[in-house]
Structures are given as C-alpha cells and as structure tokens.
Length: 336
Image (cartoon, rainbow, N blue to C red; front, side):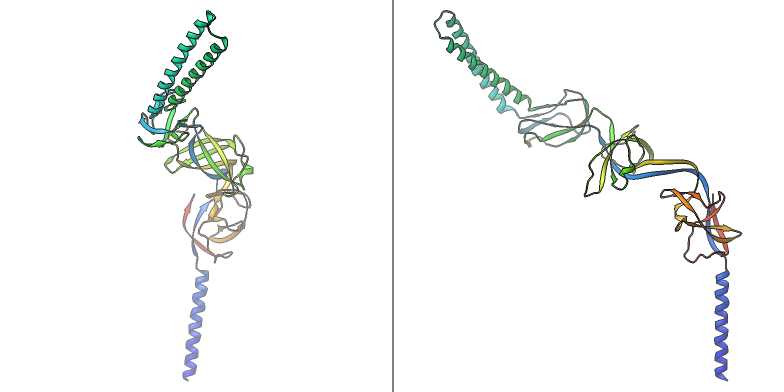
C-alpha cells in the first residue's frame, strides 16, 4: 500500500513538472524590438591618425658650443630672420680677430710690394705670392665669420616653434636641432591603414575625422598621399590626409579617421547586432519568425538590408539562443 502511494506521488510530481514545462514553453517571451528604417548607409575604412605639421624644419647650429641665450620658446610664433638663440662664440670671435689682423698685415705687405713693383725693385713672382697670401687670409677671415654666424640661430621662415631641445649652459653638438619649426603649410593627418584595406584607398577620397580631445566636433578631410611602401611589421600603410579646416586641432592630437569608400542613400537599415548568420527575428501576430536577409554595407551600428525584409518590419533586438519559430512573444519596448 505504501509503495502504491509513493508511485502516485511520483506520478503527480512528474505531471506537475510536465505541466510547468508546457506552460513555460508556451508562455510569451518578453522581447525588445526596433522598426526597420530608411537612411544613408556609409561604408568606411577605419584608421587612427595623428595631427602633425605638413612641414617641420629642424633648426640646428653647424658648430658645437654651449647654449648661451634662448630668445624664444615652444608655442611662440616667429617671423623669418628672427633671432631664436645664441651659442657661446667667444673662441670664434678671438679667431676672427686674429685672422683679421693677419689679413690686414697681408694687405699692407701686398700694397708695399705693388708700389715697389712699379719701380721694378721687386720681382713679379714675389708680388703674385703676396697677392695669394692676401686672398688666403681674406678667405680665412670670411670662413671664420661664417662659422661665428652659425652660432646665432635665426628662423628660416615664418612659423610656430613646436619643440625646443636644449637648456642654457648645455653643450650642443654640431648638427643637433635646438628648435623644430612648423611652417609653410597647414596641418595634416598621418594615419595608418591596415594592409587589407589599402586597396580601397585613393587620393582625393573623403575622410571624416573625430578626436577624443574635441568630442563635439567633426572634421572633414581628403586623402592627399599614400605611401608606396608599407610597414611589414605593423602590416599597415601610411596615408596623409589634408584638412579642410583644422579648427581647434593641435599638433600631436590623435584622431579617428573614417575613409569613405561608398555611400548609398535611402536604403533599408537595421541594427547590426540584430543580425545573426544573415537572418533576423521578426514579429508577426505576436509570434517570432526567422527571416533570412541579404545584407549590404555594414557598420558597427547599422547594416543595410538589400532584400528579404519589409520596410515596416519589427526586428527583435534582444536575441536569445532558445528562440523558436512561432513562439509567442510580448513586446517590452519598441524603438522607431
């Protein structure tokens, strides 16, 4: 009798479980939907870039020496020929003085020989030698003056000092830049494009740019140059982008660049995350139906639907692995 009661309880439990599973299976699932819309679809190549001057001139002394004076600093605008800095030229000044004295003596000696030559008291060879010594002395003075002038740095063009390397008293080797001058052309963007995408990039291509430093602004640009040799390590190609209007962009800022490959107007669009294996779940008569679609231009947010979907379809955006055809649903929220 006890065994029969246990079996009865087991049967009741199994029946209750089956009824629960049936109710759960048939219970409407809550989903969020969005209505397919029409708008422009943009296919773009994404790249990261940096704002830089089109022309950067390093300014260095051709002579080594200790930095004696800094007249300008980073961030200052300078005019052509303006004094920027001076290196200690005391040694060269002494050399110029010494060579000038020698040149003056050579000139006086040559002039005396010329006078004597007119009286036929000196051989012409001696006069020619004195003239050669004078020319050599003058050349030495000119060279020493030029070397001394190299110790004074001036701006080669009008522009902006974007970097300074050197402190007063520091020894500066010959040829080491003390200043970097941005000049002669507007700012540009240098971006790195993945080698898989470079075939779709062309000169004159439109580019849309954004910077985290200026989140509310969008900048327009055009591809101006494409490097013919890629970087085999980074697997990318360098692309130069000219700016229509640099606005508040500053040298060194990073930007996100979207190189426009193709634009299509008035196409059917759905959220990209609502597409799963070239299919979407749509709602009809409060039931789920899986609809195969053909996609076109795809971006991170929206995807073009070429065929397979009606314009007013309600697309489920809360996808689930347990969706099944004909399943009853209840719409929790809907977006246009």
